[in-house]
Image (cartoon, rainbow, N blue to C red):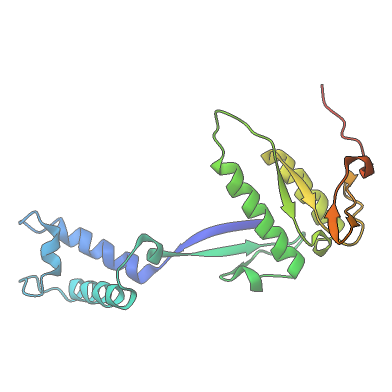
Length: 191
C-alpha cells in the first residue's frame, strides 16, 4: 500500500482560525484591523496568533498555502503495519521507493489527461532492473489501467517484458530496427 496524505501545520492553522473567529467579532468589518499593532484588541491568544503568523511570514518572506501543510508518505508491505515518512527517499528500500514514485507519477499524468478524450501513450522507465519482477508486473498493470504502456530500459534481460527491442551500434551510433524486435508475449486483445 502506498498513500500520500497532507498533514496540517497545526500551529499556523490554529493561528489563522483564531484570527478568523476573532475577525468575525470585530465591528469594523475589516479583518485586517487584527494586524494593526495599535489595535485595541487585547487578547493573549489573539496576540500569540498574530505574533506567530507575523514571525513565520517574515521568516519565509510571506505565508503561502503550501506552508500550512506537509505531505507524509504512508507505506505498508503485505502483512505489515503501515509506516509514515516525511521523506520518501528514507521510506523503504530503493525498489519500494522507486515503485512509489513511479505509481505517483503515473497517477499524476493520468489526472492531467482531458477526460473527454482518452489517450494511449508510453512512459519510459530507466534502470528497470531496480524493481523486482513482482513490482514490475504490478507497475505494468497499473500503467495499463491509467492508459500507459511502459518502456523498460535495462542492460539485463527483463522477463516481465512483452517485447524486446535490441539497440544495435554501427560506426559508434546506436540504432533500433523494428526488424530486430523480439515478441516474447503477444498482447491478447479483449473483444
